[in-house]
Image 1 (cartoon, one colour):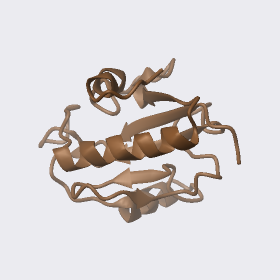
Image 2 (tube, rainbow, N blue to C red):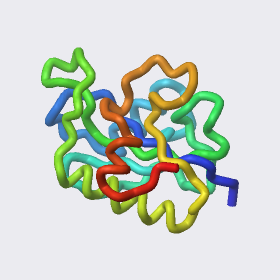
Image 3 (cartoon, rainbow, N blue to C red):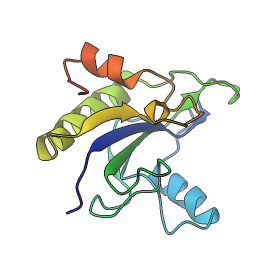
Length: 143
């Protein structure tokens, strides 16, 4: 297994309420010429956790940091117009995110929990909320 130093939270940058799934993201990424979906997990509006790329494989979700990270993507992240970043995630999604992060932290206790926007040089609002503050509010140490 490859070393994992960070669990990275993303958003799909899709308008609020659009019921996209991992299969949609897989299609979008393949249309870009990628091998498959870049994220390891996707959390749709219903709060399920869908598998993406196997965690044994490097992702394609944070340029320059894919070899030692796991990417988790929440569906949503833009307002209803699809133009502006917004925390559009529902409680089912956020509860599923917390459970997934806790499970992954159990396997990779040394891993930090970060939002995509927390990486140096990233000029995106992704995932449209402060992941580290959210973790602390849920009693989950982001490190």
